Image (cartoon, rainbow, N blue to C red; front, side):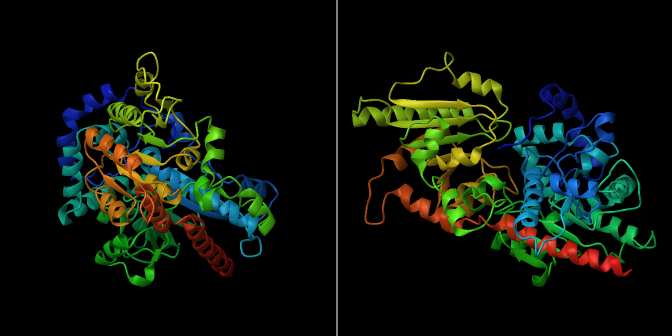
Length: 515
């Protein structure tokens, strides 16, 4: 939801130029892109020379300047609307917080080299051109379904592994050989630990580490550098996420634990905490960088659960609120959804006959979709006087908007669902990508805090039903779903994962000192 603006604003023209070659390209390349759950934007030569490493922990850089010892972790990912990078950034922030708040256990700062390996080091199409392909398949979901399902077959995964190793081994080896503290120089220093937060960053990176750790003697064995997978899907995941060769595989749900075991990952390799999420959602936004005394925490948490306070800070009215989001790019039919929900809210207000002002409120976050933002704002759209409508573009405080709301309408993205559950926010899932997002629907429904509605009419009718529901002995429908969402929440997952990773990287540094 808070993904950085897409570098491909004119993607439609680019995408249409590529669409004719998509099928032929995938076939001729042995389905090299069939497992691409997260396609990447191409960078200029200048951007390649300066990879995405400016996101490092400030304290670790300060420590380097002061000559202090620093542990290093390379995080391999790909930019797909912010999901994988958001997880990488969350882990980076967690390492910083742990070093500040638990210095006895975590005395060394940890520097994260977060790298979009396909964009920065992909040799040619399709490896370095995933964004236009992704946008085509996201728009035409039958293409997504086709590539996902073929890529999940044994032959599809074999072809992907074969051609990826054939063409990407050397450039990816360059990436994984770089100095995490100074990526532009080949100093001989490598990351102490490698973490993957992307489904296409398991098989080949493991082979590369085997080669690096044996001085090129083997690609099949000999790895000594720790390698960890942190799965960023929730209710379903592509099989390429799971590789029995990893040291640890962090999964967010029982469904994915079972999926990992079916792929040969042993139970002792699997750790189940939850999804790594942005800092604003950790334990309802507590400031972990400060003293952890009870008095400070109690003071800090004032207002966090209090919707009227949050709404006032956001300039919203203190009335029932529906939040509609369309992701970082504002995708998912957000205009039609907002208009349908707006009409139902207006009709609901008319039934109640309350003319003292708006009786319900709708917040629409359009992301980078400026056309949708303009279409839903006056004078393009005039809303009735019985509802208050707040239309936003790209926002960086989604945690506050979620905590200010009573219902969330969203596509079935795993991060958004996990964040909503932490906020106790009932969800109406409006769409999902076939494959990895499909399993998120039963995850929400079985945990009792939402449902799937595939039409704008169904979405609007569900909003009307939930807001108009009467209370019974267990409370209203929304109150019951809020309780279910909070039971499913895992607000400490990011810090739990970071603690385990920090322990691993510290152990590795001690091993290196003995060599």
